[in-house]
Amino acid sequence: MYINYKYFLSFATSVVLLSGCGGGGSTSDSDTSTQDELTTTTTPTDNSSDSSSKKVELNNEYDVVPLSDDKYHIEIKGRKNLYLILTNSENDLKSIDISHNAPLYGGDAKRFKLSTPHLIDRKVPLFVTRFNSEKHNFHTTKNDNEATKKLVVTKSLKSVGDKHTFKVEQDDGSVESTDTTLKSKVTVDTKYGEKTLLVWVSDDSFEDSCTKSKCITQDMVDELQKHFLQDGKDNDIYDWDTSIYGQEWSQKAHDKYPSELIDASDEINILFTDIGNDDSPNGGVMGYFYSKDNFKRSSEPNSNEMIMFYVDSVMFANDEGDGFWQKEMYSTLAHEFQHMIHFYQKAVLRDAYDDTWINELLSEATEDLVATKLEHTGPRNVDYTDGSAGDSDNINGRYTYFNDDNDITISNWKGSYANYGNVNAFGAFLTRNYGGAKVLHDILQNDKEHEDAIEYATGKKFTTLLQEWGEAVILSSIENPEDLPTYNFGDFKDVYYDGVTYNLGSINFFNYNPTPYFYTIDDGTDLYVEPQSNKYYLIGENLTGDIDLSLDIPRGLKVLLVSKEAGE
Figure 1 (cartoon, helix red, strand yellow):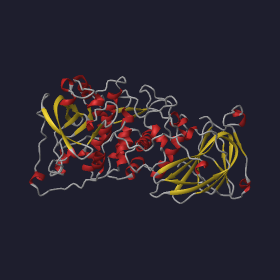
Figure 2 (tube, one colour):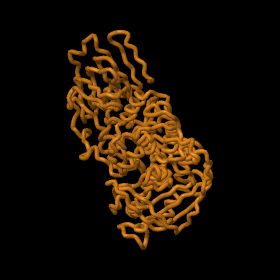
Figure 3 (cartoon, rainbow, N blue to C red):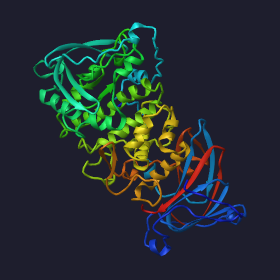
Figure 4 (cartoon, rainbow, N blue to C red):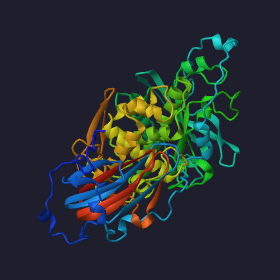
């Protein structure tokens, strides 16, 4: 749905040197002696002489060190910001006790949180999310005459100007009818044969008969049609999405479950209507795919028996913002098209189920991949011509919401802004470090379920991926950290798949407002880490000298120490 180890350490003795991954060489005290902002020097406590403490030297521009013991004596060369990534890939809550002699860092600017966290995002009707997320128990009817009858795909006989009445469900469970007119029909030869796009507009939303605050015109219809399906290769949403995920529907669906699923007409329908009847040009439900329309009415009485999308007419007709709302709609269609394909490829063909968060991750990552093709700012909220991580104090896009709630359970889908921000950030990590569009294809095109599908696609354990994700977030302020996962290449990273080039822009989470949220010793020494999540902990900023760190790490919790030069 849419809304706006490479590390190996051996402790052979009671005191050893731990070398983390790093780059840029060590930094001497003299290199940063002129800094006077948040300058802090730490001194050893009595614990520093404890023979049970493990010694860690932080010499490089950045270091990543796995921690598994109780006590550490950390020696800092230069001035560093020190962080802990607490990773819980298990299914129960973990508690960890942390104490250290690093003084509190100055100020609380980086602990600002949005005033309305965990908002339920009204860009997706709840009934749609629930239905699309169900694991459908399809019934085969092999003894039914219909099951053995091979149907011939029926090409559309509809013509522009034809009338049709659609059923549209509402939040209160009611079903309303809307009278529409076919305003565009185009048939294009694709890699999956001829496909026909039909664009319908509710009569109360179109030109002279419009009763809404913003009205659809024929030019708008034509532009949407062109963006979704047109002649040529690698020039529309249909090509970009199907090149990654495969086709959206075929006669195999009906042949497999003839008593429940509609046959194939090689049509995709788009319905322009005022979703929710809210007449809102700048907020609300942007659009959605509702898989109940893939069913026959004998199974789902409110089915429109079409492969189709619902899109909001009033928002698309909003001519403010230099085409912003139109580009948002195109991005929405790319997002929703993944959901459409997902239902067919995973639920129908493979009888497998992907958790909602994985389905949404793929759609969010799709928006990221096609942003430059749509000439849109996309989830990064950076100009589509700019491959860098953009300017600081970026207050829009998906990553403000990720930064604000970056420690929630990624698999616990509630439809909140934080949920979308988290799956988007994780999907952006996967595409930038595990093969671009190919990793998305591989997550979908298998019969694995839950995080097993992601492990299959990446070849990595989910725990490792969560840890690497945390590293990439903290090091996103550094361009191309050597031999470490990253979001930030300093420019676009081009990825190729199935004959299509996708441009992935750089991301620096510290460029967003709010910046990533870190817990500190202020929050108490006993911290709880949610299942399947990272919790980000700040030991201190602009530190130098020696620090003693004590941990009480429970079974099943992984801890990484990350340092980077102050100011990065």
